[in-house]
Image 1 (spheres, rainbow, N blue to C red):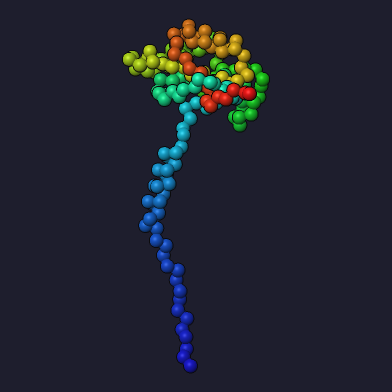
Image 2 (image 1 turned 45 degrees about the vertical axis):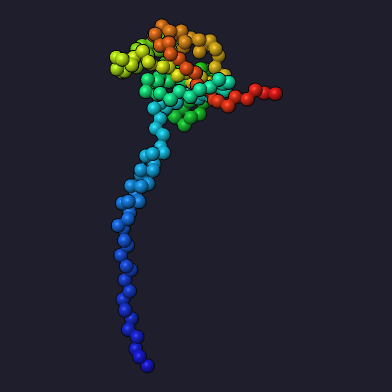
Length: 157
């Protein structure tokens, strides 16, 4: 009969040579697919559907005006009054021309006339509020206005 010696068994070292490659691949993936918001909505809005919708691809000279009901930090509607948001702040209609001029000053001289204002209004917003915003934009000289809407309009039978 032979005697067996118990050999000490050590756990082999973990090979982490490929770990940095894996981490950078995952990081690169998330950098590509992540959409960064330029404006945090402080108003709740649901855009209406449109029949003649086209996609605007140039967003460099775009200023967004959101019209809807005010929300708290968790996104819950806190009031039924209609509020206007521009550049991460709630504004009054009378403040819009000064803010448009401030946005225009940020652009190079040759692109200032290309400034476009995109109005994203809730579908239940009264037309009087939208008309007041349009008049304020007219006073500011911002005449390129587009309205955000959902596409794929299908008329009801």
